[in-house]
Length: 264
Image (cartoon, rainbow, N blue to C red; front, side, top):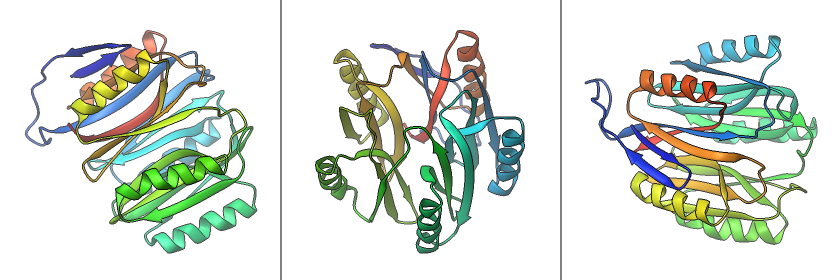
C-alpha cells in the first residue's frame, strides 16, 4: 500500500492477487472537517446493479457525492449532510446523445456534478443544491488542449470541476462558483510524480479536491478554500484491502471525498 499523509510519504509493499494488474491502484482521497454527517461506500461490477444501489440509497436519504468506474467496478460515495438536495442520473453509450440529455437537464435546473465512462457507457449524475449554477462543457481528443481550455474558462470566471476520459476522447466540465477564488490543475505521467506534486501543493497551502486518471496521465485539481483539513491520499493494489482502509479511515474521523483508480 502506498499512502500519502499530510506532507509525508510512507510506502509499504503488498502481495497482489493473480487477477489484479501489478501496476493498478485504487485511490481514496480522505479529509476531516467535511460537511457530511455520515457516509456509505458501494461497489458493483455492472452499472445496471449500481443503478439499483443509487435508487436504494436515495430512498434511505443519501445523495451520491462521487462516482468512479475502473478495472471492472462501479463505485460510489454516498453521503448524508451534503450540499445536494435533488438528484438524477442518465446512462448513454453515445456521447452526442449523452450531451443532449445534459442540455435537457440544464433546462430543468440540474447541474452535472459527476460523469464517468466505463463498460462502453457514459454515466452522468445531475444535482440541484446550493452553489450550483452555470456550466460549460468541452469535448476534445488530445489532453494537451486542456491547459488552453482551462485558461479560457478562468477568463470567464469558471473553474474546472472534473475531466473524464472515455471512448477515445476527454470531457471537461466547468462551472461558475461564487465561493471559488483560486485553483490549480496539474498533470502527472506517473503516480510517483503525482505523489511529489501532492506534497509540494500541500506545503503551499492547497488542498486536492479531485483526482482523475486517463490515457496514462493523473490529473489533480487543487483549491485553497475547501475548508477540508488533514487531507491524505491512500493508493492500494488490492480492492478488499482498499475497502478495509476506507473503514479504518472512517473510524479515525475521516471522510472519503474522492475516488480514483489508474496505473501506478
